[in-house]
Length: 350
Image 1 (cartoon, helix red, strand yellow):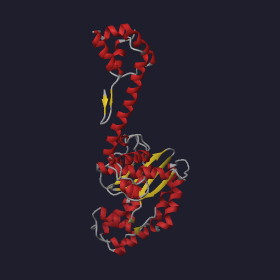
Image 2 (cartoon, one colour):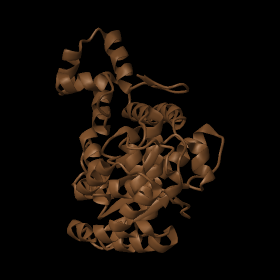
Image 3 (cartoon, one colour):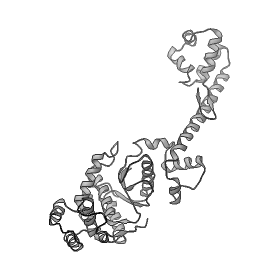
């Protein structure tokens, strides 16, 4: 017997058990009379196997109850079973849906606006392309490498929602076959664009990455996701998503290079997603690709962190001054409130 709030699904086996009890017949004897194994009879009585038309005919002969009765009982059980499972799944998904930023997603036009809990679940299932939202907890569905500032259960679901939109948009971007070697070769050119404005580099970077089999997507920031960027495989392409809210240029570039690091270092497509060490390695690769460790260490030794000195160092190494400031702040060379006037602030239109 299986139940939900509104339905109870009772297998035909319960009626068979009653008939055997009325007759004082053991399951062992019944199995012999039915010319079936005891194991199968036990499963039949417990509703673990389907009562087939052939078994219904045997039941008519052995128990004297028409085969039609047994066939109808089985059909009714299967119908109720579907309703029970559907209702239980809906109840579970309604709880899960509370973890997702539905109002924000609808505000961005990703899903229809509604306040009805059941409609929310249906819309979310269609959005995520899963029959039940519980499947979002399956790592086979959500193998994502990402950079974010904090991790909580709610932020995990926000990340999934954000990444799914990146996946949907990426389907409209044509890419060449994945070519990691080509990506590595164009890294210096991408780095050189840090001194440009978004309107000058956005479309160019998208085009360059598409030739490497990578679809670059800019998306709004979802509150509570703590998300800076994410990358993952989707079919025959790699998707890289970046938050496009107003942000400092150094954070934008570090996020982009962090995601490119996951690709270069082979972290994309791992069954269990990225490890903590993978994230640390991606941070290190991004940091030292933007500004080499040797050059940065030599600069720090001089202990001159004035605006003039930072600009001069940035110009020599072909990098935006704001990225140098961000590195100095993150490594504790200067306070986080210092030299922020050297940072560019991006507004990327999605």
